[in-house]
Amino acid sequence: MLSYYSMHVSSIFIPEGFMALFLSNQGAGVPTDLNNLYTMMSTFSDLLKNEHLFDHGITREKTLKRLKFFFDRGVLEMSEDKKEIWLKEGEANISTLNFFKGLILPLVDTYLIVLLTIE
Image 1: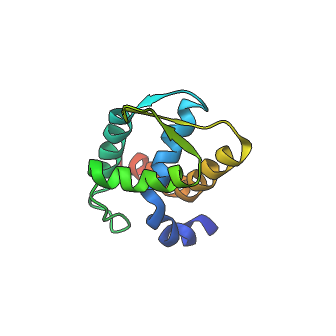
Image 2 (image 1 turned 90 degrees about the vertical axis):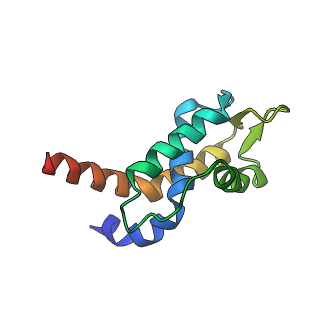
């Protein structure tokens, strides 16, 4: 029940939440191609494009701008050729990703339940 009421706040952090889900699934220290992250962000953006909670058009530039939050806090690192990123080792970094995942998981769960019910 409380998750429902937090949705208005969590909608602000949908891009960061999806990034956190994706990057935590990769694991700390495991490089991932930036194009894969962008593809995932585009997929979720397309999925949520008609939702009133989500009005962020996802472009490569916007994705990089949102990633800057994680880079500025030392959560992520980028390769010198700027093609790969990875989660830096450390409990604080994992906690940061868990925080953002926690903001959007109720939205994802609710969305999935509604889609399964409609089906």
